[in-house]
Length: 138
Image (cartoon, one colour):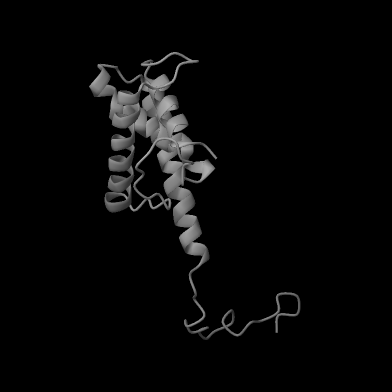
C-alpha cells in the first residue's frame, strides 16, 4: 500500500511538475492532499465510486485506498492538479485515467452484484423452471 505522499508525488510526476526522483514540497503536498480529498468526495457522491476512502489530514499516513484503485486515483489527481501548475494533459494521460476509472467502476459494480440475494424470486413454471435434467430430459 502506498502513502498519501507517494500518490501525490506520482500525480505530480505524471504532469511533469517534479522530477522522477523528486518529492513534493510542503505546499505541493498540502495542495495535493486537499485536491485528493475533494476528488474522492466527488467520486463517492456523483459517480458512486466508494473505495473506503475517508478525508485525510496528513500526507504521511498510509493510503486507505485499495491498491487496485491507485492508478485511477493517481491519474485523476494529476488531471485535477494540472491547472494549478500550468501543466497540459497529454492524450495518453487522459486515456489512462479514463480507462482506469472505468475499470474501478466495473470492479465495484461486479462486487455489488456478487452480494445480491435472488432467493426470494419465484422459480417459475415450465420446462426449465422445474429443474429438469438435461441428460434425461426429465
